[in-house]
Length: 80
Image (cartoon, rainbow, N blue to C red; front, top):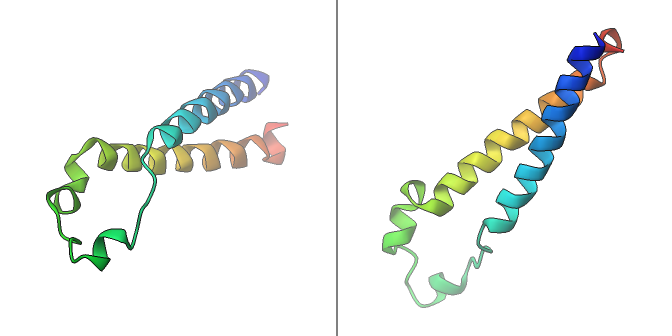
């Protein structure tokens, strides 16, 4: 069980580092500024899922789930 705990701990550390880098790479949300002038539906707004920003958001969600699952598994009583 110690090997499993060590592997999950290493996975959690790598996940934390990658998650931090991915979040810092994302652009800030400037909601509301484009809607005032009527520019809510731009090319980037329509195709955000295919852009680099969309990929970063998807990767952030996946890494957050991995982080949560790894943290819960590390705190299970049977693993200690």
